[in-house]
Length: 365
Image 1: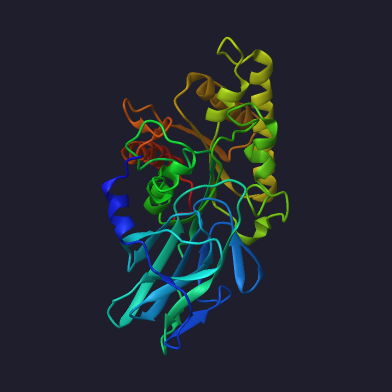
Image 2: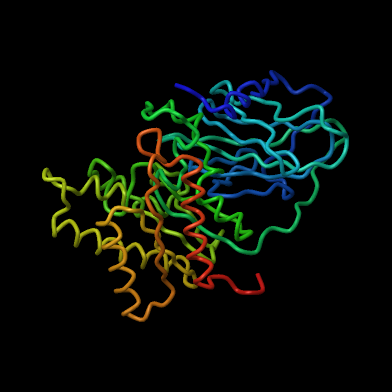
């Protein structure tokens, strides 16, 4: 597997494990109100916040020359941003709970940290147990959060899978270090609109089934979950209510629903349309005032059905739904058919142009 130059640099910056907290360090628990969270987190234990969906992130303002983290995770890769600039990629070293340095040698002043999960995994749950600061240093109240909120509901394209690789084919776990959701189209769009965001996305999943036709692996089945691959606990949708839900699904349905002749039957096409309408009803039920943007990828079958779905919704008087597309980029795919970082930028530009024309946000926000 070849790594991009950024990942190679980040590997050199992989952060050292602290085997024990020294007397010169102090731990701030995850329940500290000065810590900000993005994405779906399970917070019933004030000393251990858990997560599994891709794209979750945690932010803090702090004083001092260093900051560390206490985690239970031996799988994921994280982007570390200090004072708004990329600092390095952090990869935990062991399965047991451990302390790690994220940044050190900083000026002894006020700093900001953003720690974001880059990649997606299946059937695993991870634990964040707090930040570690120098003695006599502290966390500070967060700056005001963005008022706008966008939820991105999708598949591996939304997760940014394999977008930093140069290889055309990768085994599953080899995709972890070369996946960077922060450079995927969803966060790019959120940053453009100065919005908070959540990425409720799962590689291989669609509206009806996964890429192999398994109906138990769809996004609608998982939409109400705190943890992506666990039926319980259920997510409390009142905790975070988006202004806009961007739904980009269908690529795995076309794969999982097509017959031996390579085509999707009339029956399966009708099933896709029906299940999509049902999912839209679910989104409106949990987010009554949300505006929904259906984003179609380039396969003609998907565009035809999703355009039909939006038209049918609007004929029923549901004017809260909008339609956008992104085009295929010749030569713009790696890692088992996934968009490169450059392709994600093209996708984001096309979607942003459409979203700007829809007047989705209150002009005061």
